Length: 305
Image (cartoon, rainbow, N blue to C red; front, side):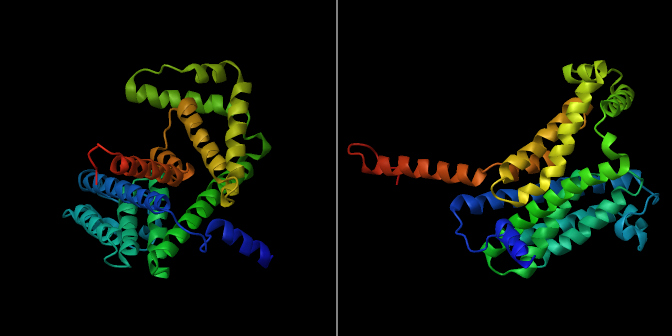
């Protein structure tokens, strides 16, 4: 068992391997993505909290133990958004190691205050997990490379575990009949009511018409989604990683087409970590360097140096 754990750790973290320029900047793009979405969430939530929420209806997280009604008055939520912005800046520029962890704590207060009316956000949970892992990485490691390796491995581990757990929960809740196409027919019909109430019209696309016309199309779609989720743990292994992540992205696009529900942050983040952007960045850098070197060495041409 110990050998399997060590083998999995090598697949996820691989602290001994060398990093390229593309690896470093791929990580920075992930970090900037998490920071950008966090800022978007906390400032939009802050404005919403101040104008729309005056009472806790559903205590979430720390709100089960702490009265968060203090977040509803005197622009506290906006001040909190400002503190989160400051902490994220300190973390980004490596000015204070605990900064990301403190940002996560304030982010959590903003989250439980915003969704104290009963609605729960999905994408912000993934973003919050990313900030949590950044905080842990900066507290556990002092070396930049070790932090990046820990972050990558932890992201793939928990995202894979989360999606596979979702498949298991579906099977526990509904059993082997979860992929029954009649379920998708019912969900599309329910979604139709939501769209009608919001926009006044519902125009089904080709895929929705196929499902509503023959439940077997719905069965195929749900079966694909269930298998994609169930196999998500395979992203723990480098050999399958990019294929599995893009399968999950395909599942999200299927949700968009069939249900008109777009998990924006989750989908974009999976695309960011699911494609070999490090290889693309390295290839682009080599191409630019080759062009620059060619310009310098070619006689009769103006040097770019």
